[in-house]
Length: 422
Length: 97
Image (cartoon, rainbow over all chains, first blue to last red):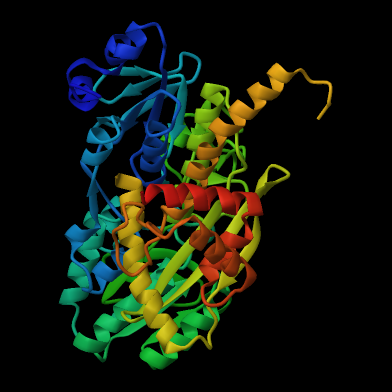
């Protein structure tokens, strides 16, 4: 259908000119322009589903990185069970197969009155609809002493990429008998089961290569989801290796000292061989700058269209949003993105909107051949996304079911990344 | 529905209904695509491509009736109406042809 790729053309001319010269526009059928900022799971999914919808839409995806590294499955990399490269996904298929204009630049500012996005390279994109998928940012001064320099010594590894590699290197060079410390932030944060999955998989690595090592989890909470399933697995697979301390025991983590790799709570100081400090979170910086966040630091949205409750015409998906029971997970971002894309497409075409189905499905590893799963469905109720059904693996589930779930998780990763990145 | 509506409008409605049907199927199938590759490939998670409409429909109805053997499919199927199950089964079956 196309004799030139919009991506190449877009790079040469800028998206504004592109739209003006596109064949449909030349015939007088103006195509709506949708700009998507952020090429993580939510942003990439919105772009792909809008570009492949029956409604004619010109889709531009703004993402500075050449490829995306998935946070999900990065705990397998930390445990030496998966190569780093296997977590990376490029945008070539979105450009080539779906005709999305992919611009590898950062968005600098949004002007909602002019319907434009300014990029860091000085160019401007106009839009009819804007979708912002800014992911998370870390809250400043959430923990005393935890600044940019401290992150290079006590990595968070909560955005997959160089931080994951740093933490893996530290775990590899740690001496047997060392203490690996994980600081879990207060709710809400990206991927709620991930700190406990991380402890489980790093324990499986230690068991083989540093059997005297210990893992200590300092939590900002007093309980966590599927706690019985995790603690049962820790006792079965890694007896005595993992200790979890709730906030009620420690008074909570208040500060870190990178010089001594120590974590300070109200009552004690814990000196670690390797410290994985995950700070408190909020919506990505662009959302803060563009007035898309409320006092909570997150973005309130309409639960049907995912349009911002604060800025009409701008939609938000993924970890940055709040407004209900949906956790911050890649699966939720993907599910929201599809609902958002269908709502925008229906609105632009003036066609019927079908009830959206929103889910979270999650596979969590307890050991390389022991994984559990859960599935939650959500519906918009009174302006919020309410949890309707919730099924989770039980402690007494058999080893064969858990082995199957570990294999299913691999298949899920393959299908899911195919769904998002084409 | 008012019975007095002119025949032309009825035709219009049925036409838009016919156009909407694959759209609804496609949107529901987007949920499947989060875990099942719709190109028929993949391992670890069973393929749903090439199964046929009736088989897909009866599988979804069975998943809806019972938490075993798969609570993920149980949650998905429970959230779908009979009409939605028919619609997604028809759409996914057509992808395999």
